[in-house]
Amino acid sequence: MLRFWLLATTIPPPGLCYAGVRTMTTSQRSNLLVVGSVAIDWIITPKAERAESVGGSATYFAMAASFFTPVRLVGVVGSDFPEQTTNDLRNAGVDLRGLEVIEGGKTFRWKGRYHDNMNDRTTLETHLNVFESFAPKLPADYADSEYLFLANIQPSLQQQVREQMKKPVLVGMDTMNLWIEIARGDLAKVLNGIDVLTINDEEARQLSGKDNLVKAAQEILKMGPHSLVIKRGEHGALLFERDGDIFAAPALPLEDVVDPTGAGDSFAGGFMGYLAGQGTAVAGPVLRTAMICGSVMASFCVEGFSYDRLRELTIDQVQDRFDRFAHLTDFSRANLK
Image (cartoon, rainbow, N blue to C red; front, top):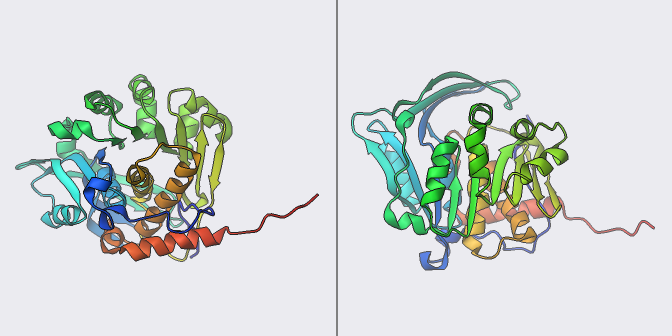
């Protein structure tokens, strides 16, 4: 079945989407810190099922971002967490000194079933386990990270991390409908101190109280962020900036979607990873290209369970898909007067 997943495209000059860590030395790249969940999922789709599928926002984010810049990860797992995954993350260049392992504890687990359209899902089981008492512990040098992404965790914990940072160049964050509903006060504090917020269209409407996404974005940008990315699943993504600039990123046709679980987190990883890899002032053109790099990584993610596709990717494949996006909307301007 033909589907479209979080895929953005525009007409940038070729060669903008470098798979940074694997083509340039660490000293040439900015450090990107992600704080979020690391989990073991049980995924059921209309076509297949995997009972032990490693997931979590920080896992997907780190694997995707590692193609563009060095990544530092802060999270917590139990002793049941697979050693293969920690090896995969380290092999991708991810610094795991901030990953706390609770001996005898069990990793956060989630079980869900996707509906036939692969857009909607039903949560069947949630076991927070060691994640229930998660208190982010940053190694001392992590506070010097130039770029920070606060993945989907409690807003109070996001704020604690934000306050430990020294002078990050850019701070991004994600949230979810639960925190919008039960922790709006804490969420407002975090939003007031970040640069970029990435949420889906349903969350944007809930947070703003507006049904129209343009009006919703205007309200959310008043809360603190300079830029807002609204992810729209199979309909692409929208970028809103405080100066009124809007970028609409269409989706790329995909013939088959295996597991959409980590699409949004992979998008955020590619998006923030590209910005950190560039290490330049964050302006409209850079943000637009970052949208495309995020879309590249999301498109690969949904082609397999867990982070399987991200693990096996090569730099050439990442660049080829980026170029494919550029070709998708390449058109000549017409004088219609």
